[in-house]
Amino acid sequence: MKKILLIVATLVALQPVISAESRSERKAREREESEKPKQVSGGELFTIQKKYDDVYDDALTYLKKQGQTIDSASKETGQITTAIAVTGGWKQTGTRIIITVIKEKAEVTSVRAVVTAQKRYKALQVEPWSDPVLEPKASAALREDLVKVLEAK
Image 1 (cartoon, rainbow, N blue to C red):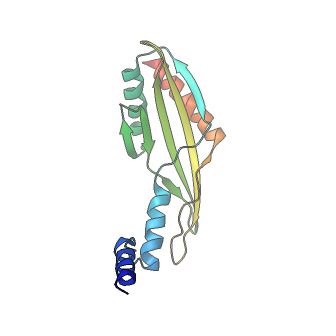
Image 2: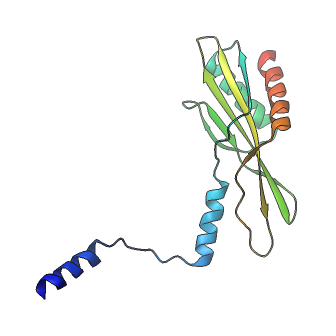
Image 3: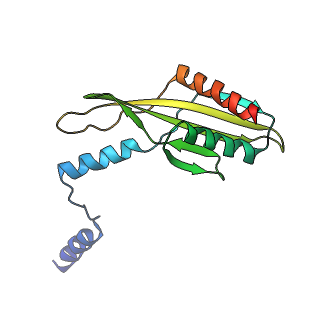
C-alpha cells in the first residue's frame, strides 16, 4: 500500500504544472504571436557594389524617410523589419517590409527585399493575423526604389 501511495505521490509531483489560462488571455496571446515577424521565402535579391555598413545604413535611412516604423533592426544579422502597416476597417490587411543585407565581399553586398501581407477580421473581437504572404509586385517596386537610393549615394 505504501508503495502505491509513493508511486502516486511521485507521479503527481512530477506532473507538469498546467497554467490556467482564460479564453480571452489565450486569444490575446494568439494575437500577439501572430503579429511577430515571420520569414517568407522569395522576394527580390540584388547585388550592389558598396560596403556592407553603407548599404545597411542607407536602407535603414530610406525606410525612415518613407515614414515606416522600424520594428527591429540589427546590423549584426543584417535584417531590418518594419511594423505592420494596417489598412481597412472590418477586414484588415497588414503590410510589412523585411530587408536583409548580406555581405558578399569587402565591396560587394547583396540585398533581399520582401514585402509581406497578412489579413485579419476585426469585429467585436480582433482575430489573429493570418500567415504572411509574399507580395511580388510590391517587393519588385521596393527593389527598384532601393536600387535607385543605394546607387545614388
